[in-house]
Image (cartoon, rainbow, N blue to C red; front, side):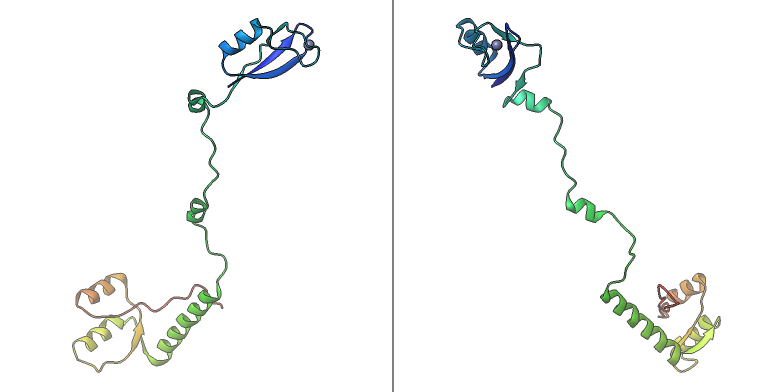
Length: 160
Ligand SMILES: [Zn+2]
């Protein structure tokens, strides 16, 4: 179907649909197209570009329809966490409990941690819970010697 903007000899502009431009030509010649205002059969196409429906070519030429952003896409966008859910609050409290428990029950050995950990590992002292500090280098060495230890849990906000 082709839509033509038509105008009669008195200047009335109207639109009409035709199967094809050939069908339009035929109907104009047969005086089958009349102006809806004055019934004139002296009708011709205006300079307005015809609208075209349902032909594949035109559809392919048309700009691709804008897809709305899918919900999946927007949920993949990373965003900083600003609020703690009750579960996270609970988890944080458990971390704090673990940390408090460690600090209360373990011996603080400070920078002697690698030394103390080694002594325990090789049976020079009795096993007990200790905590202290180790440099990344010392931590690496301890791991290589097969000495198991864990970083003290760090809380996201120490003031809370
Ligand atoms: Zn007219």
